[in-house]
Image 1: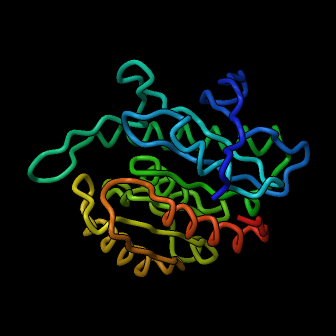
Image 2: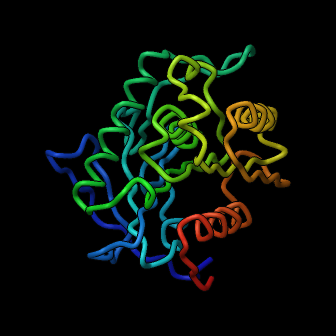
Length: 234
């Protein structure tokens, strides 16, 4: 990881894009690829600035803000309640967030003249959930996706693409063994689900809780470099 993170831009709002967002500065005028990083519930787009800073400088890094405001500087993609029986959510609200992200990705592709094969979507916690929801329902939109301490929503089942459409999709999973928010069993379920769908994936476990450690970030960066053909010196 770099010692001095690159700054991120002020918040941007464009009529052609469904969500407000920031970019990692300096943003390349003709990016080789694009990585879209999604924050978790109760966070905001600045939370992944450190990870954004470490991505290859030839890559455009975009950090959108979730559409729901929960409090001061606190946002989400959908509301969730943690119960003894597991997380509970409104499937319709989660699907609206998925559709908003699909619109946002289309806008980013048009704005920066990027193809789907140049785009990786990844996120922490609920951001990882949204990354999987987009990629597994509309695999033609992105090259690959990362679930960083997240899960695949069972409620996504009605929207899942066929094995044939998912044939070239690539996924990355990282999870802390001591995660007390989304237990590591969710990572195991994600692996099983991806295997059933025929999606190639790389998975890592760490001696950590519900956090994004330097080791997790480093492994994701190596995977991302390989997928996009970029090679930063870190």
